[in-house]
Amino acid sequence: MKTQAETLLVCCPNWVGDVVMATPALDCLRQNFPDARLIGVIRNYVRAVVQDGPWFDHVVGCDDKTTKGFWRLVKAIRCLDPDVAIVLPNSMRSALSTRFGGVNRIYGYLRNHRSLLLTGGPEPMRSGNGIVPVPMVDYYMEICRWLKLTPPQKVRPSLFLSHALQEKGNALLASYGIERGDMVVGLNPGAKFGSSKCWPPEYFAKLAELFAQKWDCKILLFAGPGEDGIARSIIQASKAPIINTAPDRVDLALLKPLVKRCALLVTNDTGPRHYAVAFDTPVVVLMGPTDPRYTAANLEKTLVLRKELDCSPCHQKRCPRNHDCMRMISPEAVFRGSENLMRDIL
Image 1 (cartoon, one colour):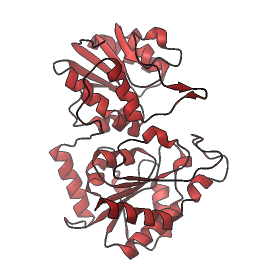
Image 2: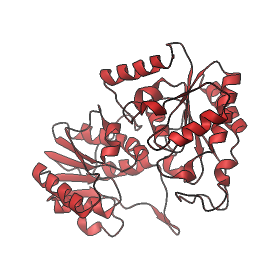
Image 3: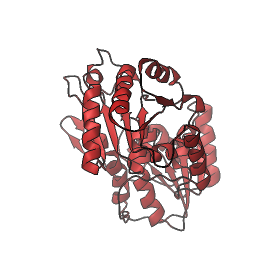
Image 4: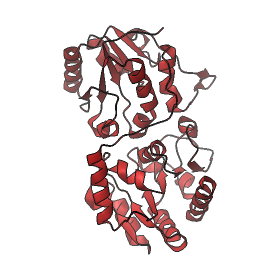
């Protein structure tokens, strides 16, 4: 049931990786509604992810989770007067805000007791054990398919950066002594989700030593807000020459040209892994508590290293046990996997 729209509101996901994995659906909406005004509702924290992209004509921030914040968002939606809304998150709040915002046609997944708030949409795939995990790229695209929209030629994540942002990234890389022909290996040891996703800092320290010993490369350590301590622990524990980006407060916008510049990224299962996919950067993902089926798409240059335990996947923010799912992945195994990935690509 293809629909028409003059003003189309899109409620975006809340996490960095999910926003990146939603970009094929955003491509689809922009392609199928070329003359419509597209409005993105997105957390300010992840706004930089869609920055410089072709998707939205206007963006509304929705960080405030208080009651007052909810009604401010409702008021903002009413002022914009969209005639159609696409709700990508599964939350009741996102459906309520669009309904109270006066949108008449609202589409999204029929789940979490919010079906009465929606005009229509697909139902998630279910089995006897509940909802079946599927790659989030396909999950978001299914809403577009249900609407009978023409899919983009390539269903894969994409990110964009302006010339000014690229130049800012180039200047920062030059300040680190990274030159045009240098091989750059990125390490991303943090995870906003929680400590359960984090590979031990001492393992990253050892891995950096292996890269420094075996490869002629520059090692770039990424550290987001609140991750200075993790970065310091790695620097102090490693004998390798590591470039620490933490003092430069690299945000999600500036992270784009840095990940794009890497020949390889080694990361926990968090947002930057999806940056790497979007920029076609080879990436080794260290996965512990999460279900790999949610991200099992566009893996041509991705190696996922994971240990299946009796408690996997738990999706808990903090490990209630010994963090074995991450500790059992050794630095040596990650280095061998990195070598194999790069050899297979080349």
